Length: 95
Image 1 (cartoon, rainbow, N blue to C red):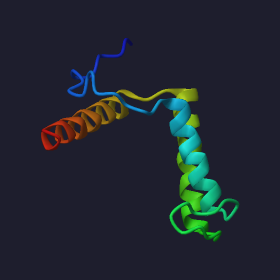
Image 2 (cartoon, one colour):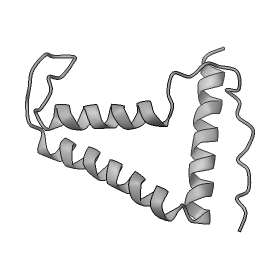
Image 3 (cartoon, helix red, strand yellow):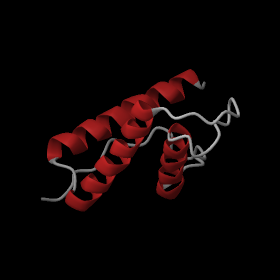
Image 4 (cartoon, rainbow, N blue to C red):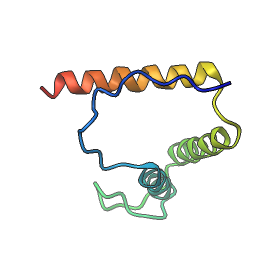
């Protein structure tokens, strides 16, 4: 089954400093901070936050699974709609 395209991107042309690699590194850094393996950049403290660490690791695991298995049609539509709605809100508030 061919993927149906998402709605048009209302943020087309707005430079975004994120790609998949930076996103994964960001999640990884957040997990390392939550594990107490790196200092929290906002406080400079190193603390273990097990629930946050588990949540971030689970998000990375879920992303890996989805890339291995693919999104089903309902998940694809949900993600498309949420991203579109958030982008529209961002564009409208940024005017």
